[in-house]
Amino acid sequence: MKRNIIFGALASLLFLFAACDKIEPNEEGRYDLFSGAAGSWFDGTSVADHSQRAFLDKYTGVRCVNCPTADEAINQALATYGDQLVVVAIHDSSNFCKPYTGNTDMRTADGDAWSNFFGIKASGTYPNAMVNRSKSGSSYDLFVPTSGIEGRVDAVLAQPTRIAVEVESHLSGREASITVSLEYLQEVSSPVLLTLFIMEDGLTATQMLPDGTHQDDYTHNHILRDVITDPMGTTVDADGHAGTKRTALFNYTLASEDWDASKCHIVALISDAATHAVINCHECEL
Image (tube, rainbow, N blue to C red; front, side):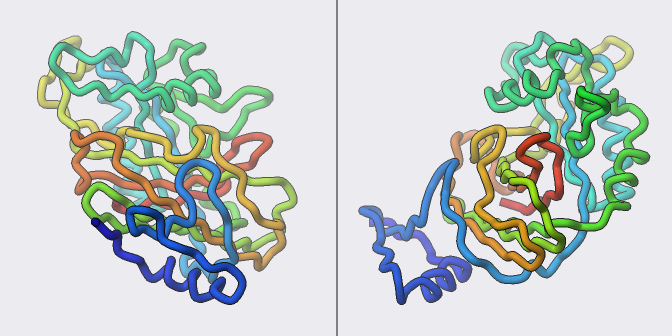
């Protein structure tokens, strides 16, 4: 019977709660505190890194003529900001994203849900993007990410960090144990959400280029593969007081054998439950 490794974070929690709750392994020998979208939260420890990060979700497609130009601009931004900027590329169900014959299908139902909710598909504009899912008036601040990235990212990074977040992942075969840790550095009066998702780098697929030709070996990075929580997030169980520290654990099985685990990353987004504006985020290797 296959038995998963019990990692340090889990072992610490078992020690902390042993006096009041006895946690037994499941039939497969794993100590699953929970699995899936809802989950449970526990008192945690301090998050070492209090960095404020910016999140850019780019809606793109293999039949989008200007998407390679956006990729160049985003790559330049990533070179400038390093791990202070987290990027995901989303393929929805629009015609721009229909894969060419024999190519990897990078569309996801979760990405389609985001596209509909944030008004991307209704806009009909690809590429399209948001930084921290902020609003301009009553609508989300969508922009074509061939330019204008730095000003939006700088505005986010200039803000004080309200919630520090860290995500860690440990992989055994196709099974991942994921730990999300939060530390409230300021009072946050409104409820917040955690959205946890997986993305993959280095996918090769045909891409339409700005001159109207096609490149068959185009490299696609930051591709959304799956949202582990509910697509719009799951409620963080915390009182919102400065100094509060909370931890959650997830067990996740990679949904497809076709994914290259060595090129996959986990992203944790913390967002305002009412507006879905991103408060902070963190990315780690799977």
